[in-house]
Length: 238
Image (cartoon, rainbow, N blue to C red; front, side, top):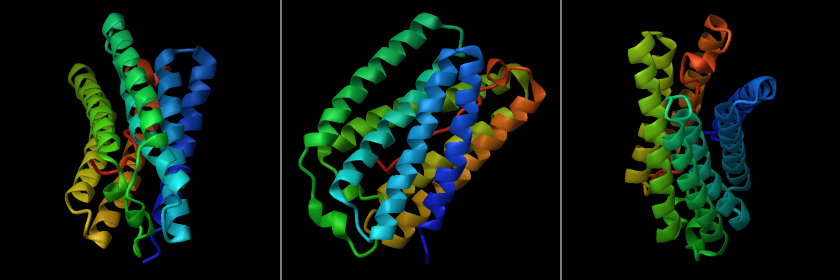
């Protein structure tokens, strides 16, 4: 199967989503829109890393290290953006500082941590999770749990308060992302299953989240003030 089509499509949707949110930030200069746009553009970049690996037939080491960094920090940025919608500025600030510090540590770890290069050249490219060092995996787990929790919790709280169905699309997209990555992480040795779970989960998840954002956008003058219009990372399984 020509797997490269899936990360290519994910990059396209995430890029369009990120540009739309960035434009909202430029219009209103709201911090949550800045964080979401950074996270979404990082999703696009992570998907392009996957695309590069698929086309090359293996993971170039520099691309792999960048991918793992993007996978953790993008989830953290999106979660941090969501925290600013919950009307607890101090808690949102603390969350942002914490994930920013962890992301800085992750940057150093991804740059210098030893990896198992044998798994970068596997005949069938998948998530590359087996090549990551324990420290890289641990940091991605922490950042993704924090980001996923904030994203899903924010969407569900928004739905509870407003009963707007686009929040359910956002929550569903978050669950699809998390489920796809979890399946890929549980069965990394099953190349086809791992690849399908990760790539299909990423694409379906980002489409659901983008639909939720646009439905909110057409319903409200400022959709982000009424709904959690956000997305989770095209992340590696953890």
